[in-house]
Length: 117
Image 1 (cartoon, rainbow, N blue to C red):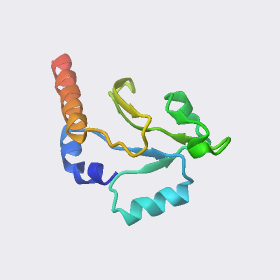
Image 2 (image 1 turned 120 degrees about the vertical axis):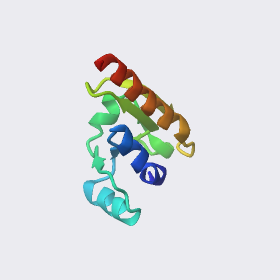
Image 3 (image 1 turned 180 degrees about the vertical axis):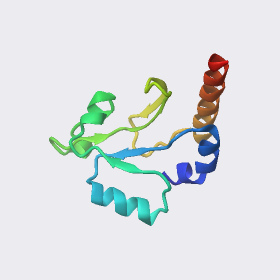
Image 4 (image 1 turned 30 degrees about the vertical axis):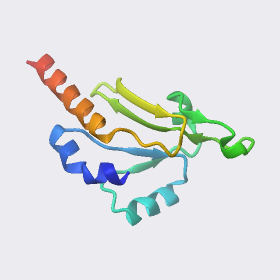
């Protein structure tokens, strides 16, 4: 999340909006955002419906029966809420290629601008 915070101006210049989603409760997400000076919202998927809808639900996490978390993932949606890029990892310790996310975001803006003309 801090890498996205540090790239916030670049995303803003692209007209992109960064949103984090966590299965934690809203109070924990707010404390995390404040502690890390995040400039974008961290939404709560406490009921785990979003992670189920996106197919990124990691069930029985850490061998805990019935405990589900989100797989580490990044999605880029266009202005019609269509997923144009996704990155999902089974390894919660793995981070995405942040430069690739910026490239994909910029490419989406270029394609969108070309289509609008």
